[in-house]
Image (cartoon, helix red, strand yellow):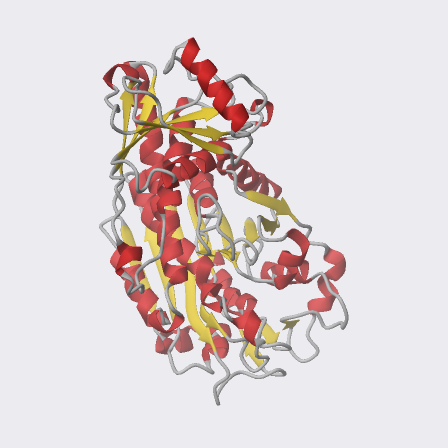
Length: 499
């Protein structure tokens, strides 16, 4: 279902037959910003008390005004406490308002709330747009139930502002929100797709389809990887009957690029664990192990629409990790693209192995910085859960830039140390490096993986995002149903915009 989003100043409001969403602050008196007179506001106040609507984040109340009022239906949505206000609260609130309107009205009018000076009108419009579009998202491609595919009544969302001169900034926010949401939804679609329908070759075709006059796409085949010495990718793929590919995409801006930036994504299209096979419960969501790679494709596609002034390189090794007769084995040694040898102690630590080749390849390009993201370690889920992405790297300026972008988008990150004290634990007995800690017992698994990846960036400014906990959700959130989340897409785009 397509959803048209636009901006209208209040003098052009014509929503008497539609739904109007008004946002309220917790602990403050009901204020409809002039939509209702004082007597009607008192009526609303009584209703909110009776219905125990306190305007906390997540609170929602539907009200049907009398004839002659501004709209046929009003939704009050809580934003939480004003002193703690972040635009992510508006994003979630807009998503809740949209879900409560889908089957009720053709048009949802969203009155952009009064905010503090910490958020511009453009930022509010972007948050509301993202909330509406992401709240609308459902993956229905393989549903045969006609009821689930039935079009909703809602066709458009209009953001309402006070003055005509405010529409320009609002439309800028809408455009940016649409691009960010579209990129996020593309990642969700790719992650939610069944693994047997997104083999490496399938994702290579999708990458090629993103190509344009400004975006070049080069797909390296298995034979080319053999000639190039990308034996880490080849080792992981050896158990699968489906050949690996390595995708290199380049977005070129108009004119001379301000910077040259690289993004690397893990692209394991299905992770069985290889010969160190996962248990059944741990394998059920492993179609999402290419979330990082999907993010790279979506970000590159969005770069053109955002008209970024930088040259952006995207690198993704796409392969399966399967326990076939030719599968790589614990004890095997593979030589990565940069010449370092990797001793395989566990075939289920395959993400860092394929990234070794991808990062080595990226580091040989003339890039100012490299950011990789991967569903890399279960340890990061233990440490940070499923709402916070692990962040580490070798360059504090780059890390701070990603933190700033994440704060803007509302996606939480937490910096973890690349503690040199643990580096000796990845020294291989037979190869140069071991792909897991050589010590037994509990280990700082996320840090170990980060130290391993650092060995393949050749000293370039580099940051790593471990999205193992955040790339998938088992529960419904305001802006995402169960399944792939598209975590860190918006943060990466914001980071690129801020360069």
